[in-house]
Image (cartoon, rainbow, N blue to C red; front, side, top):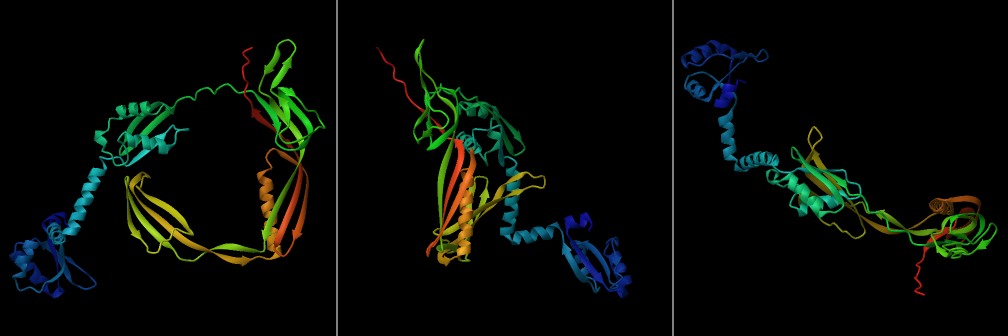
Length: 391
């Protein structure tokens, strides 16, 4: 399609092959250029295009013309004028496209470790800057200074603009030195038989082979010196002991099973910068006895840049509890699986020496009684206060 015809408006005609000579004669008389006249081999018809004004001159002649198509800028403008809603939508889209280059689409934060992104985003919002803020009104240097003054955890902050993205670079302040440690004793966490005391600070009060009870002092933080009197310190070290622990796991034959009803409720929300609005909600969403799954899908450009437009989908999946039964084999397998999970959770720092499992079955279910003998560090640090004696 010729661009000049598109801008002034065009009409595309078709005539039969037998009227070819008549067509060229009419075009000559109407002072219309025959440029672009084509013949289609399938139908044998001859197609040509001309301006809408030229089409009016041809329509006055006695030439059997068939209109194939018409269009161009004037016709498009007329159609849009007759549909004000579509016209307003196009104008609004153009306005949004222009305005979107003048506002913040996203905020990137780098360099933070202890200070979370949520806290920094909230502090920027308190300073009047966030998604959707007008970029020309933002003084990045003044904003960085205000952020450092507002948060003592930040020693350095720099804010840069990269298109519609505001990038915040921070360096966190060094943590203050921890306060001096208080004096402490080493106390037994549980009963056991001492196998190896490894005390490297404080006064050791036990030896290999001693039987100790939970709460007993293993190493004291108060040391008696013949030359300097009493000295207070922080007892430290490890005390390995042989210990025994009992685990009881019960799995009933009859239990309450969680079953989804198969129904689903859905809520759809539109995210535009910091604006959130619900656009759809199915009826019957019940938040009681219901699993809720939330997901937000943000738009991205072809280069991966995040757009400030997203759709949030919240799915509600109702469930109910029904009475169910399991066989003895299933109950036994579940009991052993639960026992292994509990043993694994307590295995850190332990060396297992012996393990015995007793299986008890009755009409209600399966019960496992497991006794574990292991070697572990039973020393726990317990601080105490020292009162100054004025005399």
